[in-house]
Structures are given as C-alpha cells and as structure tokens.
Length: 388
Image 1 (cartoon, rainbow, N blue to C red):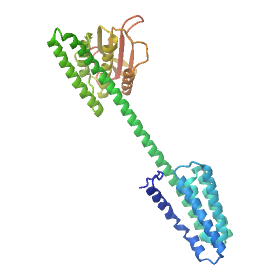
Image 2 (image 1 turned 135 degrees about the horizontal axis):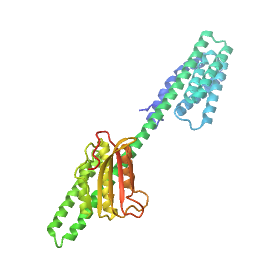
Image 3 (image 1 turned 90 degrees about the vertical axis):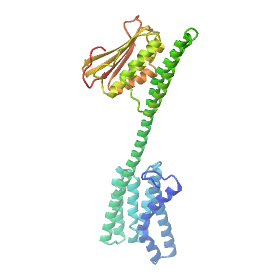
Image 4 (image 1 turned 120 degrees about the horizontal axis):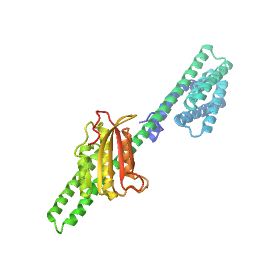
C-alpha cells in the first residue's frame, strides 16, 4: 500500500504510484488521436510520436520523483524547461489538439516548483498557451477553457504539494516526538533504578557486614539481620518491578520509616520524624520530596561517615507562594567539591519538574563538618507546622 506523502519503497508501491500518476495521462488522448487520424507524412508522424514520448518522459520524471523531495534542482529546471519547449513546438507544429500539453506543464510546475515560483510560473505557462493557441487559429471558447483548466489544475497541484509536504513534516515530527518520549522514559527508568537500588543495596551491604560481625558470638542477632536482608531484598525486587511498570508511587511516610531503618543499621543517630507532616503537597510534589529524602539518606549512609543525621520539614511563605521544605543534614565529612553525581542530577530534575528547587552543600561556615540537602516543593493545600 502506498503511504500518502512518503516515497515508494518497494516494487508494489512503485507500481501503485505509477498507476495513480498514469491515470491522468488519459487527457493525452487528443494528441494521440491526432497522430493516428490526421493525414501527415510518415516523418511528421514519427517526429510527433517521439516528441510526445519525450514530453511524457519529462512529465513523469518530474511528478514521479520530485513531488515530495528535490535533491537536484538543476535536473528539475532542465526537465521543466524541456517539457515547456516540447509543448510549444508540438502545439505550433501540429495544431489545436496539442494545446492540452500545457495543462501537464502547469501540473508539473505546481507539483515540483516551490510555491513562491509556482504562483508566477503557472500564469506564465497559461499565457504561453494562449499565445500559441492564437497562432494556431484555435477556437476562442476552447482556448479559454484550456487556459482556465491550466490555471486551476496548476494551482490545485500546488495545494496538493503543500499538503504532501505538510504530511511528511507531521510524520517526521511524530517520529521525533516518539523518540523523545522513548528517551525520556529511558531517563526516568535509569533515574528510578539508581534511586531504588542505591538505597536498597546500601542497606543490604550494611546489614550483611553487621550479620558477619555478629555471627560468631551472637548467632540469633545475626539471624535477625539476615531476615532483614531478605525483607529488604524482596522489597527492592518489588520496587524494581514497579519502576519498570511505571506505577510506583513514593510516599513520605514510607521513606521516613526506611530512612530510620537505614540510618540505624549504619550506626548513625537518626533524628527523623515519626510521621509525615500534615498538609502535604499534591501527589507529584510528595513523590518528589520522598525521592529527595531517599537519595539524601542514601548519600549519608554511603559517603558521609557521619555520627548523626537530622531530617526536618518546614513550611515557608515565599514570593512565589507557600512551599514545604525538606532538610536533611549530617555532621559527616561533607561534599568533596566535585561535580554532582547521577543521583543529585536526577533528583534536581525531579524537584524542578514539580516547580520546586533543590540545594545541596556544606551545612555551615567553612571549616565546619557536615552536609545539607534542602528540597522545596510548592504547597497547594493547607500549610504544615513549622517542624515535625
């Protein structure tokens, strides 16, 4: 099946396109009949046949190959000039029955030439048709009808060409949008897997080390840690499946519980609220804060060598409106000064996607230990308390 506005790709599509274009050659019946019935010498008939064949070849090459896209404008201009010259010569040489060739010249102009040229060339071709018709003693009514036909069909083909080009551009735009959507989905999946597995695997590693230390002297405690490892690994598997399916929703309540567990397992004193604050942002805003909490706690456990970590929520009134601020602060070694990693980069994208801001840096003046991550998300509901 031939797709509208798309080049033919196989033999079947080429045949379909050739049939569609060839149907319109039926209007060459008048010059063909003239060649077959008029009393002329064999030489004149042969020359007329060759001229008509060359004219049709120029027409088909232009309409068949260059309606959608033009790769070489020199070929187009030469073919069009040859087609126009053949129409003039054949009409002057053989008379009124050949004036219909100018209709095909107008069609070629509308189908191939840019619109800014076609709007000038089509009337010019019609004017040449009228001039040649007057030289061949054409009937006035017939000449007028042919002139109107040349104008109308020429401009109609210009409209068809613009429609085809628009269709091609829309198809390309649709393909681009699909590619961008696929890239965005891959980025989302990579970001989610990083956040999910970074947290869970860090917790599994810590509990494995703790169980290994307890195993000789305290096998019962070690068994408990191993049971926790199994629970965390099962939850990580569930999280990964949800991330792949795209139906995962992070909540602050769940992440607060996970943060306490991770910090305690790492031997870090956890000053973490027992419950999420009242008056949370909408679902997307809460999810962004939940991801920020998870990433911040994961970084504290893995990189900070901290003894204490504090999580706090604060409602603030800004010039842009009320926001809920999440602050995660530790007393560890702080940032290295290097460029932010994939986790913070992806987290920044998440928070900014819901209209929020993210800040990360040293917790206090120069020389002070510690690192602070602050995420602010717009509030759409009631304000929360200043501290939870």
